[in-house]
View 1: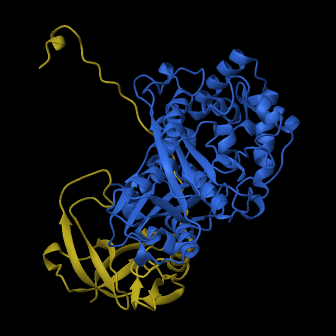
View 2: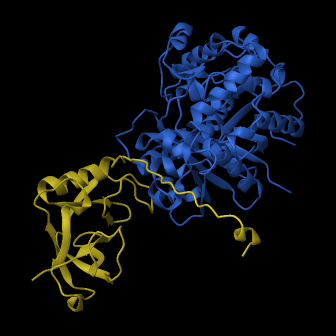
View 3: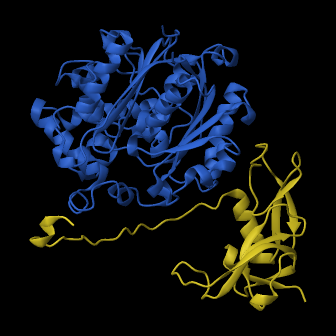
Length: 385
Length: 153
């Protein structure tokens, strides 16, 4: 029988375009030290370290070895994971699996990236097939732009609708001391920002950030001794799609749709919009903040703009999305999915400070990456059955 | 061999991955390299709990996770702990082979420094021999500001 698993503490760094004050190992240590402080645990208490990033962004290929001084992995079992954009959410799922197995009691899970150290788009292109995709495929922005075009055509969605998502997230980020871009923007500023890949403009896109995040997962045997507010993992789901970008069905995010359905079924969620209290969505661009809510079954297809314009996803709405400011405000890629997890945990523990959503009992975080694939995790304040 | 090779030419697609990088050196690395560049001095950081002087310097003790801020000047002389003679050629080599490199424990340090050995005949290199650094005249702030180590004469 698997153990039940809870998050007992989190730590993240301050994020910037360039954190010149630290090298990668020191950046990792900053997040780890905060997570240990949050739990009042020491390095000796940790019995497994799981770390992840995307190797090509920093050009360091054995990060599990290289990061030991920062991760605290000295003479401990240490695992490295990389799954592209979903690296952070994969890390969270792996932490859950490893502790649920009963073989480890306290797992320290670390996601990090120092995106300033290379050319992000060039590095992303190395993830794609050298014969078929690299010559014609224009990196992350291009793949998202074709999804947005299909979505606009399907339902008459406008660039203004998408801009409303940016306005929400950038406003929320101002209340999060760890966020990278902490300046509000207006709809007009989004619409008049430089065009990157039609219809995606500069302010529709996430930045690239330097930063790290650490989350400590503990088994039911010890979680309640470590904290009075454990955040229980109720379930996770994950779907990968195709190898080639040309095979993707761009009418809705199929991987997220499928993973969400599995997760709701596993966790007994019947009316997600009503039952879920907060979502930290891995939303690298504004249109994803509309289309992907539909893919998660929060509303009917084509109706997400109404949900967003009506304020349902705002801080004081029925279902706040990205109270932290989300990916549009902060994006150290290998950490990004794990920050979603940490932010949900902070909300449920009542530690979110200025961006606290009151009384969070059920929450979701997601991850997105590569060829349009998805991770999703569901958390509860109550211990799962 | 597959039969299709008799009728179709097997193509091999040739390309390259070329990504420029910049790496933040960080706090202790910057202090170390600036001392080396500007004053030809070598410093380590000391963990007061574990009584270990780290070289290259670390910001965190890997054994006890304590933040290190105590600086200790080490060397410049040291003892050769182990070495090898490189006989093969590769584009990544720092010198034309044959050449020697080893791990040197500088005086007052507890962890070794990997570096090149020169001004010595290969048959004269011995574990335990005393060595000293030869610095570059024009130093730029990287570990090759030490050109190599040579025997103390």
